[in-house]
Length: 159
Image (cartoon, one colour):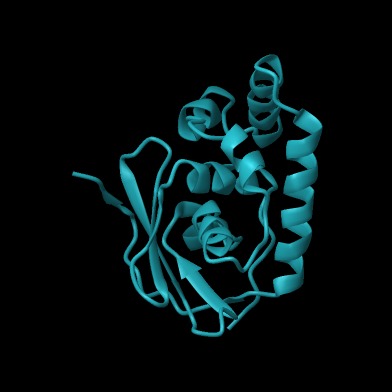
């Protein structure tokens, strides 16, 4: 078993959106489902009872070896990572897939675009960035281990 690689910080923004949009469903004591921002996929997340091992079938977690946003969203939802819900609400409704495609997966440009839009509507860019930094630091301290893959990939489509 190996330790997860840390994700790009953009994945924390996506996870905060998933929580704010109520796209995270805890379906059992150690299992959850996270719906994509485009609402066309559902990702499965499973973890050990002590939350030291975790796995997901999203692309980043499954293929890239770093913690994908569904894992982060679940950790936020179950309280393993603390966060300011008001900050997450500023990220509600962001169509991440559309924007990521628009900027050809350049996460820095995607985040700047989203933050510019939030700032134009009266939200605080600095507050969001600081919240993401806080969550990123917490995530790094967890030292999460990659649980054995149990889920199939690719993720199933919502019908």
